[in-house]
Amino acid sequence: MDTIVKRIESLIGHQLNAAFLNCYLNGKQHVNWHQDAVEELVPGSVIVTLSLGSSRLFQLRHISETEMVTKQHEVFRKRKEGKILSPEDKKMVEWVYGKDPETNLSIMLEDGDLVIMGGTLQKFWKHRIPPEENCDQMRISINLSLHTVTNV
Ligand SMILES: O=C(O)CCC(=O)C(=O)O
Image (cartoon, rainbow, N blue to C red):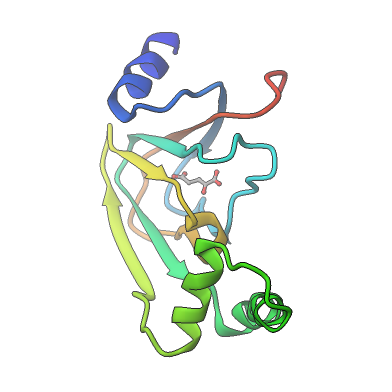
């Protein structure tokens, strides 16, 4: 495991210190739309997933308009109060004024593929591994990240 992590660290140029494992026995087992909690991660770090075993779809979608509305209010209040907007806030303003973000992305993950999630992805996008009727093979995903505390 240590060798795998070191290899990934050198490939992506990011340090990692925590690993979580997901095991999908077959296509019935899946993970619904969600955003990963990033509160305990080192700011600016990434979440990396190493996919092993059977091929499975990985999907991304931009958070819904309803969810955006709550965030919009925060950003518009900040603007009104003359506060400086962060790059993420500016992205929100762009979104509100009609830039059409790509809303859905499906990637087939094969054995040995790596997914790297960083930047503002967890804030504005949800991801999932959808169920797949015809998959009867096992898949393991190893999620690696850099936590501020190491005893996780
Ligand atoms: O199995 C995967 O590739 C994704 C798992 C996931 O989204 C998660 O553990 O938060």
